[in-house]
Image 1 (cartoon, rainbow, N blue to C red):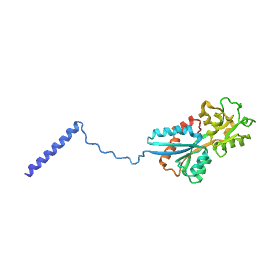
Image 2: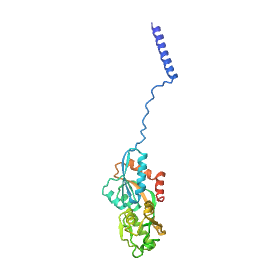
Image 3: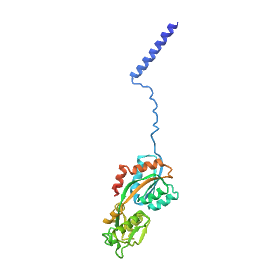
Length: 268
């Protein structure tokens, strides 16, 4: 009896094995194993708040759109103002994740106050250019023309990077300007020119290019005395540092450099 049961067992196993082979031959497969999750992969999500110099408005608006398109589930909130104003806001506890300054001086203020997470990365440069209305009513063709009697020129305030650059240019050239107005951001200077309230304004090359036919640009060689370097960094109080680091990486990537270069910014 034991021998008979053993034979039946062997036959049953053979049938089972044969059936499995037949299923395989017919194209049937066993259920696939559940893939193991890649614990190293990171899905970016959430909101990153970026405080950026006013002169970066056009480029960072584009960079933010590109970043969101490449990272579904993320949102970039942008806040633009003069770099010195942004430093004040961050120092007073404004909820920023990333800070992009139009000069190294204002970034250094945050670094000295221990308000940065790590070190800043330089990502662009910019120089001044004279912006005049398309008709150029004051016939401005040089920096010296801005010092002529009766010319209404507008500049940035000295604490703003474009204002500090203006002062550097004045000292290097020996030309002293008497602005009718000193603004808190370069976009405000440009606004005075486009509205016809000023005969000329000292802004950045990128601002002139971005304004299109609303203004005419007048380059001047003395601008080489004040080249502004733009740094970017993660703020130490950031609530989403992973997203902040990712956004900075996108700004400094080849694609980011192209957006900045197309707008007229120079390499750092």
